[in-house]
Length: 271
Ligand code: URA
Ligand code: SF4
Image 1 (cartoon, helix red, strand yellow):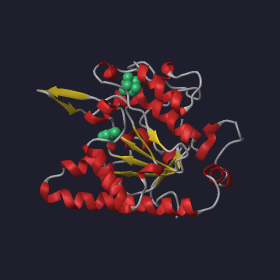
Image 2: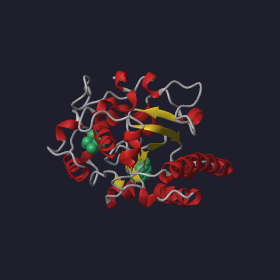
Image 3: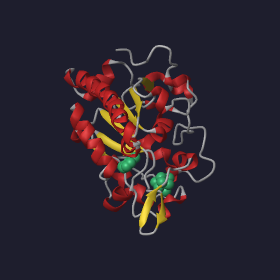
Image 4: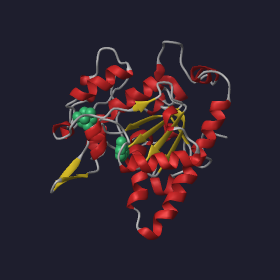
């Protein structure tokens, strides 16, 4: 299967939503500080997960209990990117453990994608909410907040080098694929990006919870159809022999060992 859907520009032709930061970047985040200044000296995933707790690159840390970094299998071939931790994630310090996470779990099980083999993360690492009485109501992060937080996701993806990314909802789609990809129009289509050769936008599992009664089942079926596509692709790449690293090497998508990873998937020109 072609990693690009006919009629859609490859991701490198799309204008990216968020300027990249970090060592390879020529642009910087304008409105808030850059999260890169909070990066640890050694950028391993556990070190990043610790360091994100001290990030002050946008105001969201002020009211959150803790930052919630991505979690899962270190050599996951498939990364799922959500929006922002919710109330339960903020309290427990783990991704997708609240209502949306339970919905995601049910859907993953239904299509045969094993959560324990994946890496789950979010575009934004601190919970954003509005207090309403005793409850904390989830608020959508602004573009500036997603931008400020992007270096954490970028570094996560750079370390993980997944073969597949599933973007759950508009915020994740915008962070990974840019503003020209829209969830309603483009869900279930496959793109290539600098972070993985196979990137699919779909709905956020909370959309299933929020859908009006008469649309809930239809929304769920759409989401499941998208996930089945991912499960099929996941099955294909998992049954191919060799390690994940071999798979990258044989496609010739990596630069020299230890060299400049920025040429991955040939999208460097997008920056
Ligand atoms: N919604 C998200 O986007 N991420 C979580 O971790 C939980 C809910
Ligand atoms: Fe840093 Fe992201 Fe938290 Fe903002 S939301 S403080 S950028 S980790």
